[in-house]
Amino acid sequence: MAIGIGGPWDHLGQLRTKAATMHAEIKTSRAKLGPKSLEPGDLVGALQNSELRSALRAAKRADRLRLAQTDDTFAEAALLAHPALSGLSAEPADAGQPSEVDMARSAYQQRNFAQQIAGLELREKTMEAVDVALKAAADAIRQEAGGLSEAEVERLREPKND
Image (cartoon, rainbow, N blue to C red; front, side, top):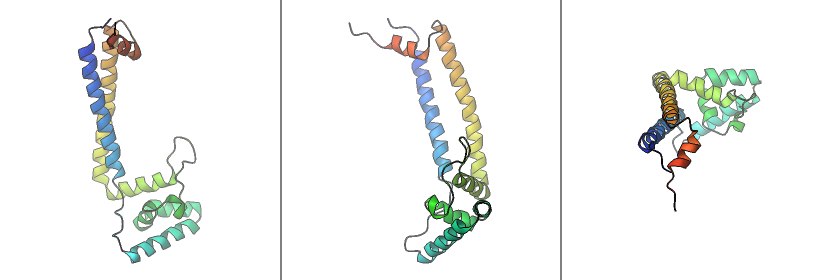
């Protein structure tokens, strides 16, 4: 038995796909906000970054975090290489908390890309509202179909091969 909500449900699916794409674009845009890689062959820059990472790695944890979060030169050296080379942890100390690398990246981005970050945060807030609206639309469609779950709606929409 096919039910008559296919059109609205299909349209909602298209809107959900578009919203997921927009969430991914925001995440990708945020990830691109970082230090520029060194030019190939820039041995002086590579050596300087290596020395800066060594200094970070040798520093006490509190000093390492302070330098990586407040000094662009140290932050760039740390963020352009594997975290182990700077001594910064890529894993959060507690679940749900940012890692040391995440904290350094976030501070660097706020200092160097404040306008872009503000724009991305506005887009994220907008997408939160879009997500709420999409959930409300899905709930309304499901309620109109007799309070079915999304899985039940999908199952009923599938054509039967008799």
